Length: 345
Image 1 (cartoon, helix red, strand yellow):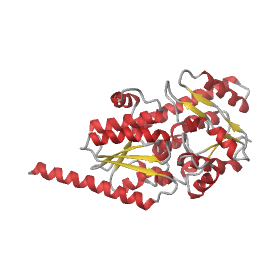
Image 2: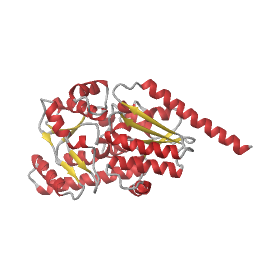
Image 3: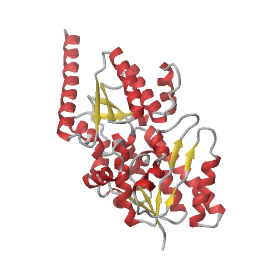
């Protein structure tokens, strides 16, 4: 019987799940994914986490608690840096220790350190150490690593083709014949992500674990689709475009996700490829306090493109978000109508 490895459907799941799941599946393990975020998961996470934690971290706690009785191992990577000379939020660096400290009953933790700021030697050593739990064959571990890297590249290619992460994850899952099991509870969320309706395009900025978790985002993407808008985010932009956008900064942003948000924001402002921009942030996020300020400064400087900042926490109600989205979309449509009338004389 294959051993069951639990992966929480939160935080960097939206960036690395194809890679992580492929690695364990190639080693013969069964990957167990927690359910899409719901009220029970959030409430459990709020009870377990420290008060100072941001909403996504509290949600992560809830996903861990849901997986505990279902799995033999829990995969909790220690994310320090996922690219050269850039870093992740400090809370992510200590997340495995925080989980162990605040949740008493846990299955064995598979904890690797992903620190690619200088090289990947430690990361590879940790992969091999984890791989030996499932097989003593070093060649098989190496093959699993290669397969995981291949799956990550395929996932990133789908993003750059214009699919938002939830849609890309669904498409990848279909390609290996597991779509029904993995997305039977959140298939509606995946369907609403891709929409080719012309006329109004909204650029969405924010961390992936905020934007694409429907419970955390209060269904922002779904609501915008229902209002007739198509949605793109910074996650569909390639690295060259992100770097081009960041050239406006006096120094390189050292937070990976902040750099992508700023690069996407500058790209949207400069190219006019969207009709309006929404930045969705979580209350209590340290990096967002700086990144959001930089985006707002640019928005005030470029007054020709509508911009709205939305901040969510565990107390945010969906009705208030919907009202603001409706007003924002209505304002953009009125601007478009007014400009058409001016052109027609």
